[in-house]
Image (tube, rainbow, N blue to C red; front, side, top):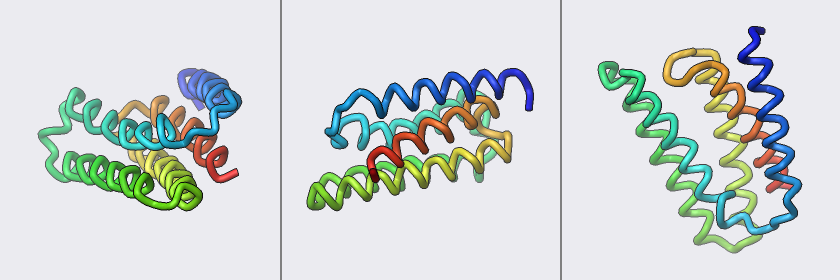
Length: 129
């Protein structure tokens, strides 16, 4: 593992702890819309890095924004106890999405995807807990 990945792990672990330790139990704010924003970040970063020339990669990123955005929006329509678990599952699914990006090393830098895996897992587990 290279130095940037180690730094990413350390920083994202600290960020993950800070996000879940704030004691804010309201999952309908950052917990919900942060999920869609994270997917949108991958699309924007991919566009900035020139992946618009790769239609399949761009389509996958756009689909990710739609899926994670729909998941977040749907969770808000459900009973709050159920919606919370839907959002938690979404964050854990996004951690898997990040892991795919880490292994593919295409859309975002590997250190970014690795950091997102950690933060997303912290948020997902904290919401499910």
